[in-house]
Image (cartoon, rainbow, N blue to C red; front, side, top):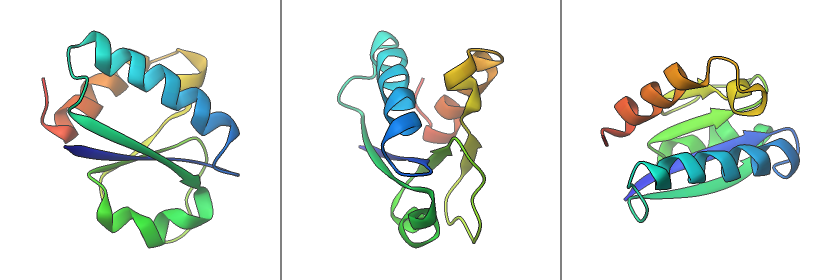
Length: 95
């Protein structure tokens, strides 16, 4: 089970939007049940990231991130999303 940490300013608004889109994309690729998504506040990322395989955030993180990191704005805008999805799949090592 791959663990994905989604972060935004409050851990509620934009991370929820990214969560819905990411789940839909991963499920459409036949990956349902192979991942677990957790949302958090951006300030919690340095403390929580060591327990995750990937962190996606919609804002800048201050502090050390202890897992691979992807800026997730493309999930909100749709612009440049395909390369981001490929990067997510490569980091998680699921195809």
